[in-house]
Image (tube, rainbow, N blue to C red; front, side, top):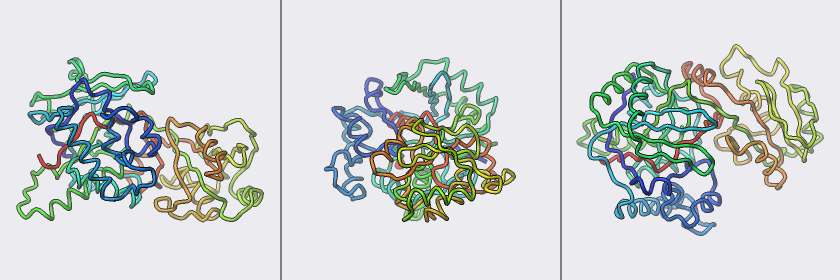
Length: 414
C-alpha cells in the first residue's frame, strides 16, 4: 500500500517563516502575487511565481522564469534564510480556519505509488500547467510546494499526532486572512516508523494539487531513466506531500466563468437552457446553490437559479451525479461548445474564499460573459470516484484552507 518516507526537510529559520510563507502558486494571478510580495524580498512568490520579478508582458513560460525561481531560492539558502534538517524527519502541519483544525502528516510520497494507483486521483490535469510545474521541479531539483493528500481516518495515527502536538511547534502564526498555521518536527525514529507502518496499510488520495503531483512523479520518472546507476533509493523517487485524515477536511465550491455565449444572444442562450433546467430569475442579489443539482448563473447583471430536470443527472452513477458533469453535459458542451475543460481558453475557474462576488466582478468587467455557481462536492463523492477508477472533470474540488508554501521543501538531490 502507501509508501512514505522521512526526509531531510529544507525549512526557513523561525524568524523568517511568516515573511516567507505564501499561498500556493495557482490560487492567485501574477498581479495579485506581485501585490502581496511588494516590499518583501523573502516572499516565496519570488520562487514559485518568479514572473513577478519580470515585466508584465514577459513570457511566463520562458526558460528565464524557471532559472529566476531557482536563483531566488538559492540566494535565500546562501543567505541563511533557509536550512536543511540534519536527519530524516516527518512533520505535522496544522491549519485552523473558522474554529476548525486539521492536522496533516508531512512526508515524502513514493512516485511509484502515483503510477501504480496506490495514490488515487480524481481529476484530469491540464497539459500546460503540468508542463509548467515539471520545469520548476526539474530546473530547481526541488519540490518547492507540497501536494495536499487525504487518507481514510486511522485512530492510531490520530493518537500519534495528538502526542506530537504536545511538544513545542517550530512555527505558529496566523496569516493575513485569519488562517492559523502551526508546524512540528518529528525526529524520534520510533514515532516515524510507527507512522510509516500505518501508511503501509492505506491508499492515499490527491485532494488538491494534481498538477504538482503529476509533475513531481514525471520528473522522478525521467531522472530514473537518465541515471544509469539508479537504485530506487534516490530522493527523486519521492515527492513532498501533506497527508490529512478525510474526516477533518472540507470542500468548497469551485465555479466557472465563460468568455462568450458561442455566438448566441442572451435571450437565445436562456431559451436553450429550458430543455434541461427550470429557470428562475432572482435579480441582483447573489444566489448561492443550497443543494445538489441547483446552480446559480450570473448573466447581464442578473442572477438566475437553475434547477436541473431529473433526466439531466443520475444519482446512482458517481460521475453522472456530479453537478460539474451536469453543467458540462447540458450547457458547456452542447450550447457553449466547450468540449475540453483542460485546454479550452474560453473557460476559467473561480473557487474558495474568493466567493460569488468574484463571479460578478469577472462578468461585470466585461472580461467574462456568464458565470456559474455550483454546490460543492463531498469527500464521500471524491473518494467513491477515486476508488472506482473514474475521473472528475478538472477543477471540481476546492479545499480550504490552502497549504502555505515555503514552510517545507524536499530536495531531489539528497
